[in-house]
Length: 342
Ligand code: SAH
Image (cartoon, rainbow, N blue to C red; front, side, top):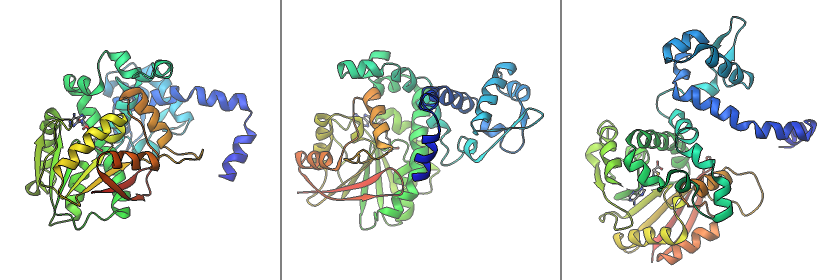
């Protein structure tokens, strides 16, 4: 940290600011590489821009400029014969488990990016930038745009796979008989939990079109016979029959009133002493750097939700009839927040 501060001090402030301002240029170049699946193409052997343009149906000279810029910031390599090659950084965009290619596509592509263009609208009005840009809430947009929704769901699964290990190292799900993953997307979390706990059963619950899309990945997960799929609307009800409910990256999508409504539905579905486990980033009260402070902005512009401090989570639990019992930090930016039905 000290080293970083010292280095930052050597860079004149206008240059530092230019680096910040042009950050979105770099991010958009990453989007192009992610969308065109270029990381896979250069994983094993370097290729020229023309070769990559032929493989991706794009304009070689323009692709060259994007690749040259990405090589200049270390995302890929460029050799003396202008062949571009992979790096550990670009490999994060290769396909396969734990890939963040879909995350790059969903965050930097067709929906989140135009919504961020309306950040100032959110700041001026408190309204949801996505709704301003698209004329409807994000979940309705995804219900109508299957391709975008598929990429979003893949992005969530990819991030979940990345966070799973840290989560399991931090928190013991053992002792639960049946766990219900409310808003569980394509099941990246619940299949991980069931694999680690061979006698546990699970229910994956999400909107109908998402559950439909989850079928293939659940069937090939190795735990399909212990994982029931149920679809519905968590504002109406959530499935009963579990002694614990887990919700990962759900509550941060909603304002306090909506969050309490979802949590009250969980309360109704759980037995006495049932656990409500949230997996969320907890925003530190102090000014320290923390990823949560930026996911929070993503929630401001996309869903109208927010990231919360420990005190804010405690209030939500109490308002829904739970007692927050503990917050277990993990090696990722996410914590496991546990509450019990009282
Ligand atoms: N828990 C998953 C997905 C988080 S994204 C993960 O961490 O990977 C939020 C999820 O909430 C999406 O899968 C979305 O389809 C679901 N969702 C949004 N509104 C819903 C509703 N009214 N009822 C049920 N699920 C809903």
